Length: 268
Image (cartoon, rainbow, N blue to C red; front, side, top):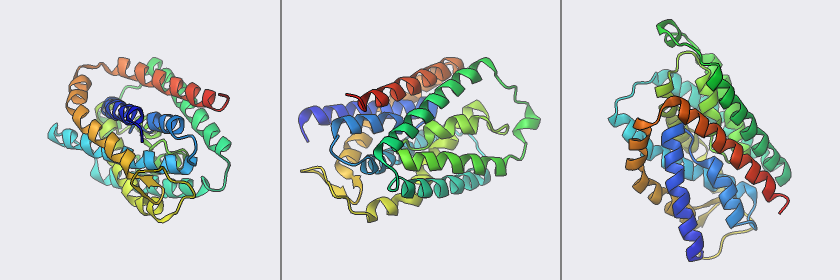
């Protein structure tokens, strides 16, 4: 890898951590188009596997800070929702080998565009959550939502957070403050649950002079996760000062811009 690629990956690590802390998304929406741009010769499945591994690393870093902040969540629901996500990711990852790269990109673009639109709609239609809503048993509903989100994540390598955040936000028992905590936990558990699948497959193409195991390039993962670690302190400071409405607007705009960029890459 060249110096310019390494610098680009470091910047991506900084931004990935910021996105994960602010929006509850793991940075996969950023890493997939960036890796696709930097390494156009490698298959999208390898990009997806490497991206999801990066997402897992950045989520662990953020969870350390969330635990220190003592933000409470329902552990039982989180485990059940994570199991639904794991199953969805596994199925999605397997399906990614049965469809063309164009279909994978199309799913990626349509998913991000839909989530961007949904995010802007949610800003205008804010739902009031009282104590009764927060005690509501929406475990089963959450399992199905996370299974769907996991399937999209497995196919595209988005990581799940960008899909899970809007989906989790629709569950009455989850407050705005808890969304990022739930999604970061789920990204770690979902990643561990499918890690073996990434490592056990042998790709036809590898990146020269890098540490590659199966479909995961650990040279890329190490660079991005280390830079993410150095950004984590500042990300949490920014998170504490950003208003929820502004955060949603930035999330919607980010998803839409990345979707357009990924689409344009197919015609350049």
